[in-house]
Every structure is written in structure tokens, then in C-alpha cells.
Length: 267
Image (cartoon, rainbow, N blue to C red):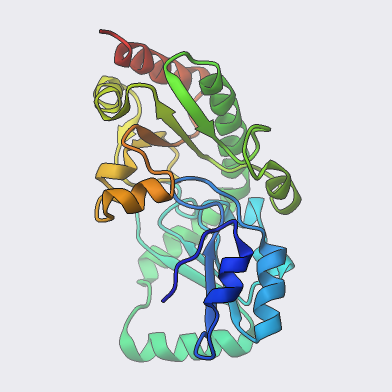
């Protein structure tokens, strides 16, 4: 397995060998919400006869449809937005009938299949997915805008903020910015710990895509197994916070974030 810089396609091309079978991407990325140009990656994959696989968990099929950009397989963690309430674990793989037939055969013989009850819960959750994602989108964009102007925040990243480095690409391949906002607190790890401890309404967990808003510290949770230099190389600083913006009233979400940020600034 070879890892490459998300924004340097020359590295992607150089990493391809005769034994390369798949190009696997996640866009937006976790936790940095960087955007990968799917059309460009698809062109590279097709040139070399390689399968193009996209993890579409953050965007959901409401905000982004990788098949329109050439993806052969699309993967979702149904545990996240598809369920939306942190009740079940599941996953979804989408693709052509031929590819899915091979995957289905593997799953039937080796066991990674969802239970009927969890499948039923997810089928009910899908009935409200589009409505929920619309609220996630609007709440997250508003929270991102407010964070940008807060004195305790060093930087903010959200796909539909004009300050996002890949804003134009995001607008080309996404219909909404999604529910994930990341920001770096001034004061690093110490300030980040104070901020998280001061939150009242937001949950502290590594999950995302819930109806409730969730705060996560990637460096000590989801990406803690990476070496420090590896985390810094992909922008995961000690003060980085990932917020999964929920469906609560946007002012309630902001009031909790604002008071915690102000608390983190105290000497």
C-alpha cells in the first residue's frame, strides 16, 4: 500500500506500479476536510486500468455522488449519517453488478453481513436522510462562519467556506458542504483540553453524523496511533478540534462552542 499527498497528482502517478489494483480515496478527508479532485483521479485510474474507490462517508449521497465522477465502488459507513442516531453499526458498498457480485459472494462465505434488525433500522433512517443532511449542511456552514471570526480560533476548515483551499473543487463536486467542521484553537493542546472540558451540550466521542453535535480531538482519539510527525504532515495539530455539527438549533450549538472557546482563553 502506497500513501500519497492528496493534492499532488504527480505523486499518485509515480506511485502506480504494475501490481497496483486500486486507487482508494476519501473526500472530504478525515479529519482535515480536504477535497480531492475526483475527476482528475478518475482520469488517472482509467488510464492505468485501475479500480477507483471512494469513501463517501462525510459527504453522503445527498451532497456528493462519486459515480458521476467515475468511481467504480463507493463506500459508506452507515453507522454515521445513514443511521443518524448512533444506534447501529453497518456499512454499504455500491458499484456495478459485476463488482458487487464478487463482494456479495465474499460476504456470504466469510460473515461480514449486517443483521436483519440493523438493516431495518437503517432502511427507516434513509427516509429522513435528505432532510437531516440539509440541516447538517446549513448548521455547519453557519458554525464555520462564526468560528472564523472568533478570537480564540486560529484557523477553520469547511468545504463551503471561501477560505477553504479547495473551495472551487468542492463546489464543483458537492451540492452541500456536509456536517463536519474542523478548527484549530489558539493555545494548542492545553487550550484544546480546556475547551473540550468546558463543553456542556456537545458530546465528546469519536463518532460523527449524529443528530446531536459531537466534538472530537483527533490527535488523542481517532488518529492517536499515528506518530506525531505523521499527524502534523496531514495537518492534525495538537490543538485541532473536529466538530460533527448536529441538528440542534444553530444558536444552541454556537452558544456552547462560544462559551467553551472563551473559557479556553482564560489565563
